[in-house]
Length: 255
Image 1 (cartoon, rainbow, N blue to C red):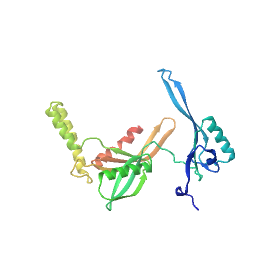
Image 2: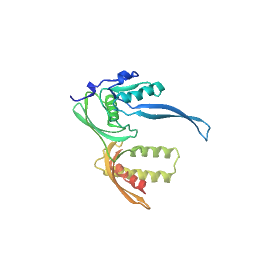
Image 3: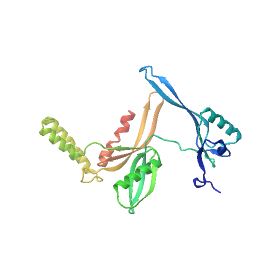
Image 4: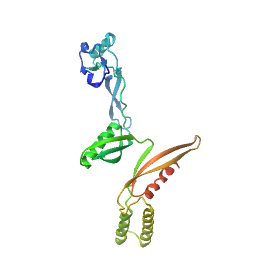
């Protein structure tokens, strides 16, 4: 018979008799606190220390039970979590954010989402929360995957129309000179023309879309030589032209 969570019997106990013949379900730790004095501020800092007494999956025979009795009497342990199943592997806890791509079918229409999460489980929680709050109807998450070597960039610059409006207001308030106004307006018009030449752009300058760009990064080292890496960037911006401008970011970082 294949063992599963449904057939597992797990409990915490301080009774040695209920431990015998079981497996330790969670690491048994000896925990204490040490106080240190900060030399700069003279402040007392308390740091928690841990020592592993028994690893997860350890079978509790008479010898192990004798050691557990000693730690219980000593006060290093108060109880132990045991199981009838030998579980050795543990999920590694990750605290860094990674980009994920997910596909959700909402009323038979597929929508793609990009998000940052610490794990697939965390990504699912974030995704379900967002879809429930922003859509109607039933939905199914059909795909979710970590995007290796990918960075999601959000264009926080104002749209071309918004920049033109700010220039007009600043000029009318005498916050910028006529020369500054003319030069800045010419730059904005040029940017607007570049966006207009982009077939993938729309007439609505305030609509952002996701664009994928690739970059080959060369990192120069004086002694160790060059390191070359291929990276993918997902840019949330107004047009492919503006997204393409983000190609300069890797070169500035590697320079």
